[in-house]
Amino acid sequence: MLAKRIIPCLDCDLGVPHGRVVKGVQFKQIRYAGIPWELAEEYDRQGADELIFLDITASHERRETMAKVIEKTSENVFMPLTVGGGIGSLSDARTAFNSGADKVSINTAALKNPDLIGEIAEYFGTQACVLAIDAKRRYVREPGKEMVDTPDGECWFECSFYGGREFTGVDAIQWVIEAEERGAGDIMLTSMDRDGTKDGFDIELTRAISDSVNIPVIASGGCGNPDHILEVLRNTNASAALAASIFHFGEYTVGEVKEYLRKGGVHVRL
Amino acid sequence: MIAIIDYGMGNLRSIHNALTKVGGDPVIVSDSRDLPGADGIVIPGVGSFGDAMRNLTPFADRLFDSVDSGTPLLGICIGMQVLFDRSEESDNTGFGLIKGDVVRLPEGVKIPQMGWNELTIHRDTDLLAGIDDGDFFYFVHSYYCVPEDRGIIIATTDYGVDLACVVSKENVHAVQFHPEKSSKKGLRLLENFVEMTRC
Image 1 (cartoon, each protein chain N blue to C red):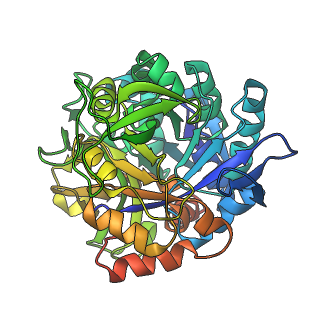
Image 2: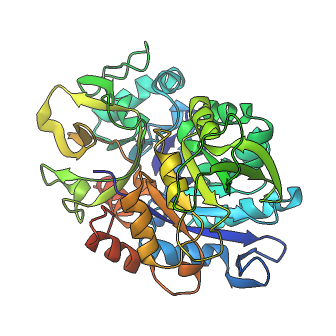
């Protein structure tokens, strides 16, 4: 049986030599968590199933720095590696793959040019294209939107782009269905309402999206402890959970989280 | 020297890095004339069956010669599937080094299978030394191999069907998962293969 995946996310500031993994605390001060490939090796030892590197600077000149980070990581870390943040074209994707990435995640570029999903899938395989979504709850009913019941009332989920700075009016449920048809291989689903709060994943969002598509959904945003991961993997069809700060600052190891999940009845690789 | 056949369909950095990591001396080979000197040959897993066979055809004669002379061969993912007679994915025929078909994963499971799945080991072999029943490996595939001779199946994995994921027929070995993406256990399998090339 396929195991549920635990994926540490490495948010990379590439404006410093070699890059640094960072974590914003309440969107303000940035804490440095370490050198990307050193953290990657540590997560490999701990039993992570996959790693995601996000370029939070997402600027063009940093693309080569990210390629170096992945090259360096792939010398010693042998698990699937995803690169995201500022991938805007097939050529950006190719740079990432040539450096050793197995998948790229795209968000803004896909919303602006949905054909990019199909292009990446055609050249590199559907498994290589991760569609990232930053979704926010909207409690005001609008025509044509998929309304979902939540304990806080009925809402729909709006996609944002440009790192959460702008909104698109696009309904996240409708967008994932389209993205699956176009050839996306994974959905990396981040709740903007929960991101950075450590209050737990948005269960209703994750359930609504993972029930709408057949491709795997990676739940993200709000993880503060192992119980949150257990909750989202038990109560939704998510195939994976992503977390950053609980791993970066040594609060929990990936192994500890997996032990906890296995005791809770979730099938994980140990 | 271990030849990694480059059939022009993607980057081979991971498999090259992994073989290097376990003490092998891999060389990426894009000309079939470089095959005869190899102590071992790896057909990596990139692309689709049809594209792979089109690009691999120029290697066929020298590949058969190497296999006949006993050189250990390891096919990975698509590199496993092309060793069989034919695939539902394409009209191209495979190498036929292993008798059997390649068929699509059954209805009712997510396709492709993508992620970590467990091995059920049916037979101990050198290739799986240090690898136990229940160990996880990383899979990405939409088709799977059905060998005519069930006796060559070393391990299976359960994904809607019990599918053959490690087969060995004399010096021809093949795995459906990606050992170069399967962390410690994957490296162990590659190390075992590197050992075979030294005999």
